[in-house]
Length: 419
Ligand code: HAM
Image (cartoon, rainbow, N blue to C red):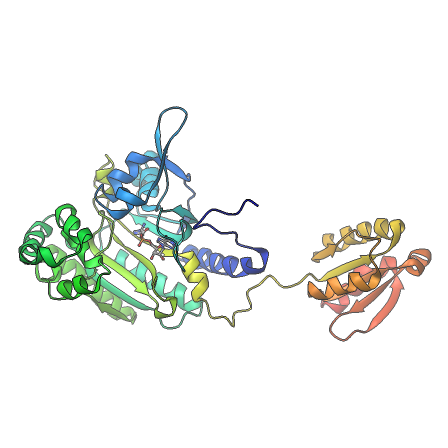
């Protein structure tokens, strides 16, 4: 048997309701704030990610699905969507429009990681990106939108944790201070961290090794090194969040694994998710469009892991699609023909109708199926009904039935369902 690849999975009809629920809420929430949807290709040139996310990042150095196509191009399945969206903004000159560009996306991303609960090789993100302003109000308003979205999903008190990771003015001095702290401790660090010291020492904060975490907890914090402009930006963001009443915590050692971040960086983790507890991450990336060959266009955004979001939904949410309004059971060929026409008329009237043309199955078996599907009503075309051009209408909640003329079915169901 051929099975789905390791780290990928099918999302089956019985779970899709939860996915549609979060996606509907996302669209609704973001559109209220003026965001429009963008859909970018699943694969892009490898160079886009190397330049955008950074050669030394874990994603680019060892997690990308990269291949050469028949034309000899190096292509990569998108591991994230900030770089592709920035590429699209630049390509379509959307940054030239007066005012901000507010975009959101929902779709699959690909990373070659060791799969475990909540960590997939094909996973989905719901994300937003705002281009065109470095004003702290963009950070604050987008974060307020994000927290409201999570609240509307009924998540249990998600905590926003944020930091400023500085910019090209203040980061070099911080980097030097961090290296000065790490050098004498190098031998005690894991192999990955020793490599990170060369590529980007800030990434040592992401290390999961217990001993390294203890070392990093004592390391100098970027917040003590921010230049005046970054300090002021961060203070404004925090002040605006306080005005909103958005609960948050500053973690001076929070850094993110992608190179494009400047100034604000943030995450929301949920303990209920277990080991892979990062629900979402994001921040400001004012240098990204320039790194891709464009002008200076500031940007800010986040991406939520949809698998993790769906997992974290309160289980009480009745978010499956529900059963059909009507299940039609028919015996014999004539029954099938009548059923098809009645099903069409009911659907035209807006009803959700399931008809399985299995006329050799007993009525009893067909009713069992209606029950499994949780249909509200069953229409029965048995032998006598076919002969008399009538139909039996059964209400599944109380088992009551009535036999009525076929041409009155649409109206009768309308009455029973309240229009
Ligand atoms: P990221 O932190 O790499 O950021 O990913 C964001 C979220 O995607 C994570 O918090 C997690 O929920 C989910 N995620 C990442 N990898 C996996 C995986 N292998 N399996 C399941 N879920 C996963 C970004 O991707 C940035 N582009 C976010 C951003 C947007 N920054 C600014 N704008």
